[in-house]
Length: 145
Image 1: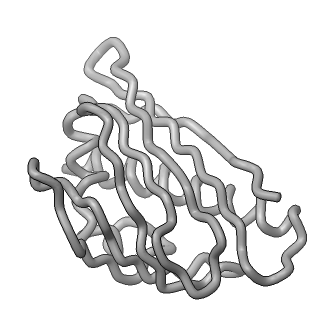
Image 2: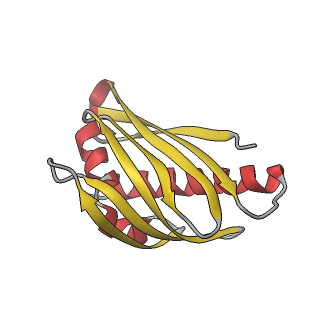
């Protein structure tokens, strides 16, 4: 059974600046530790990614998979697993909330389920590592722009 993991971080930038980095999939290998390759396969009418192929190496979880993205306004994006060799589920979201002083609170939620047997403790640890590294990488990337 899949359980979700979530975490939040405050970034010293406006939500639009944060979302610009989140939406720039081609550059994910530059700032995420786990994504080794990213390729946008299709876009919506507004030019935002709808399907993205990602090569992931998160220690216990390694996979070449495709995610389907749904954009909800300017402050939220979610994804679901479209195709995968190893994963049964990889659903997640970034939700952005503006804060005083031009800052943004980013909440990342992730649910991972693998096709091979794996202890729930190891799976949750992998989720936590993915989330923590992604949020730290996102913060560093946005604040260094």
